[in-house]
Each structure stands twice: as structure tokens, then as C-alpha cells.
Length: 551
Ligand code: ATP
Ligand code: MG
Ligand code: MG
Image (tube, rainbow, N blue to C red; front, side):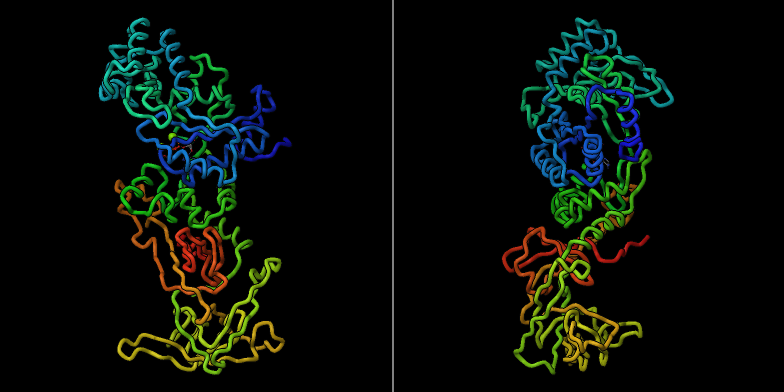
């Protein structure tokens, strides 16, 4: 078969195309409920649905599944559109709302009643649950199941007209109370709920249930393949029942795939909302959140997220994906693209005693050694510098190839220096500064640069460095599956955010713009945060250079 694609959904579609199953092009949809911000799991669904349209020269709709007025808000609608576009996908003029079909859904419900396939039931929620039975016990018919068509029509119309109180009546499908599939035991199609809807306002006081609205919305839009997650597999008979019993224009095929579960985080909107509402994180776009907006603020690129979604593939069984895989995708992307710069996160002063006071040298530094086309910049060097506190030990073990009394290191793009003397606070013993000497014949790139030393350190010039704030992030939770405990909040990582306020970065970073990404030499990839103000850059660490992941 010459058509591209390798997963089981591709194979189903290829077969359908071969058999001319649908008279139209492949048509998919991404159907979020606007009750929260999108997360990386949604990205998998977005890449899959829009990706199928791309591969098979089809179409993909964006449809808001907004049938639950109490939880949905315009803020979420807007953020979802922003996120889908940012990921690189476009629904063109195919933006729909399930609420746009409310009238049509109501008409179809009248048809079901007229055909004797739906009835108004006065049992309350608890009674409905009792009558429904269990996996091992069949359900019992509702005492209202045999109402006449006339009575049902009258009651349903009065439900819409607002004559009955919330929860006092529902419309149910008349299917089979002894079906082995509990979803088929006369499921509820409509409920009474007085709640203002973000699009229809107070026009409606009855709202359709997901299992009723979803298949019909798909059919109205001419969807050919309706892709959803595995937990809807048991709902497929109901999806098909609805489409078989109302006069819809086509019958889409529901296909289920495994949802993405990522380690050391939670992924349900309800739980993510709890983190936001309880102030555990600083909003939906907190860089620790697995939301698209959090990943974006952290510094993830859309390319890396799409690459990740490609790599994890599409399967039929649920599993956990190692977060190291997501980190691998962003490292690979930024390794090729991010300019290298020098930043000292925990500064320790170094004075080069034999370097002339007041002298400044501009050293040439490549922006990316593997990509010379990314060019060079000038980095100032002077008598007073800062190195990383971690890069010095007074009494180091043999294998410590950084700076120590009497030892030599290379300063990146500059010279070899030797530590001559340590100055400490007399009271606390804290190391205050190092006195060093440099070897003028060892400047990087000079023909006389022959001498080799084991360690190379990053540094900044004290007179030129720019003060910066750097935020270091770690996993939000301590457990791979924080949800395995009832109280998932108890599994929070208390050290998921560390804020360093005394960092010093090279002067080329004085005027960075939010969203710019860099590799800080030896430390990782960093992204300029939106909290940056003039002359006061704030950086988020996207990911460290090496995988520190404990497998
Ligand atoms: P949540 O529990 O996070 O609210 P949901 O499934 O209720 O998830 P929707 O807004 O209904 O959220 O999801 C829109 C689409 O994204 C659906 O088709 C859904 O199947 C898919 N989706 C949601 N979460 C995941 C996930 N973790 N992996 C893959 N697809 C997902
Ligand atoms: Mg849903
Ligand atoms: Mg949900």
C-alpha cells in the first residue's frame, strides 16, 4: 500500500479508502470540552487528528464539546484555540460548538420519542443508579418506561419550557435494562439544569448528555473517523445506537486509542484545576504544569512536542510514558538551534592577579560549535571574573577536574588560569574569592594554544555581567503515578521550583526577549520568561543537558 502511516488507525483508514467506505474525504475532529487548559495528553490527540487529515489529504475540525454549562468558560475556549495554533495546526473555517447543535439535538430527541425510543423518567439520580443494576445483576425497568408517546412529548416539551425543577425529570433512551453493557441500560439523554451557558446564555434549561450529543455532532459535521480514548470503548454501542435511531446524514466510525499518561505528573483537567485553585502552582501556565501553556512558558517548542507525539505512537493499551522521552525531544531540538552562552548561577569571585587592572579584552566565542553558520559573538574578559561556586573545591578528590588550590583549568573561549590563593571569611570560613594567575600564551584559538588541561569552566566578566534570575524546575510529583493514592496532592515534590536571584549572565543577554532560548554552557537549556523586565532577565530552565533521570 503506497499510502503513508504505520499505526493501527492509519491501517483502518487505508482499508476504508481502498473500499470507498465513505463518499467524502477523511474527516476527523478534535473535540475538547472547554473546562480547563489543554495538556500534553491533548497534544497527542491533536497531533493524531490533524495529522490524519494531513496524511490522507482530509480535513480536521476543531469542535468545542460544550454541553456542560456549569464547568465551561470562554477563557478556556480562547486558550484552547491559542494552544492548537501554537502547536502548528489550523482548523481554517471549521470551528464548531456542540452548543450550536442544541436545536437540532432537541429535534432528534422529539423524533426518538415519537418512534417510542425515548421516554421521560421521574426517578431521581440515586434511584436511576439503583435501577441500573451492576455488572453481575441486570437492571430493572423504570416505572415510567411505558409512558405513551403523547405523554412523553408533552413532558419533554415542558421540560424545555422550564416547567420542572432541576433534576426532577430526565429524558432516557429506551434500549435494554438487561444489556450486559451498562451504558445500554436506558442511558440518560437530557437533564434539566438551570445554568447560564457561555454561548447560549439562559436560552436552555435542558442540556444533552455527552453520549447523545457527541455522535450526532460528529454526524452533522460529516466526520468519517471519530477518534477517542479507550475509556469510551464501552460507549461505542451507544454511539452507534444513537446514529442508527435518528435521521443523521452519515454514520461516523468511532475508533479508540490509548490515552497518554506521563510519569511524575497528573493529567486530568480536574486535578490540574485543583493545583491552580489551591495555589500549589502559579496558574495554568506554571512552567511545571504538563499543560501546553505551561510547557510553552517553560520553553518547549511546538516542534519538540510534535516530535514526542510522533515517537510515542498510537496504541490500544494504556501505559506510562517516561518523561525522559519528552525531555529527549526538546534536547534534540534545542541542541541544533539554541545559541550557547555563559551564565553563572551561583557566583564565586576570581581575581586574576597578573592581568592588568582596567584592561578589557573582547574574545571571540562561537554561538554553536556544531553549527558555524550561527556565527560568533564578542565576550569581554577582564581582571575580575565570576565562576560557579561548584567549580571550586578547597580540598578536592583526585578526579575533580575543576579548580582547586594549585590546580589549573581553562576558562572557555579564554585562558588557562591557576588558583594561587583562597580568601575566606574569618568568622564563618565561607569562601569569598579566589586569587588566580593566567597564562597569556594560552588564549583560545591562538597558535601557541598547545597546553592541555582537563577542565574547562564557564565564567562571566565581573565588570560586564548582567544580573539575572534563574528558575530551576523539577518534577511536580515524587511518584511516577501520583494518582495511585487517593490524595494525590500528598505526593507533591516540595522542591519542584528553586529560584536563584543572584545569577550573572554574559552581557550579550542584556536585552533578551521572552521566549528566546539558549544553552547555558554546561548547565542546560533555558528560556526567557515573560516576567523579564528591562535589564532584568528571568530565565526558566527547560531541561538539564544530561539526563539526570533515575530509571
Ligand atoms: P481530562 O480528563 O483531562 O479532562 P478529557 O478527555 O475529559 O480529559 P476533553 O476535553 O474531553 O478532555 O478531551 C478532548 C480530546 O482529547 C478527547 O478526544 C480526548 O479523548 C483527548 N484526550 C484527553 N486526554 C488525553 C490523553 N491523556 N491522551 C490522549 N488523548 C487525550
Ligand atoms: Mg471529555
Ligand atoms: Mg474531563
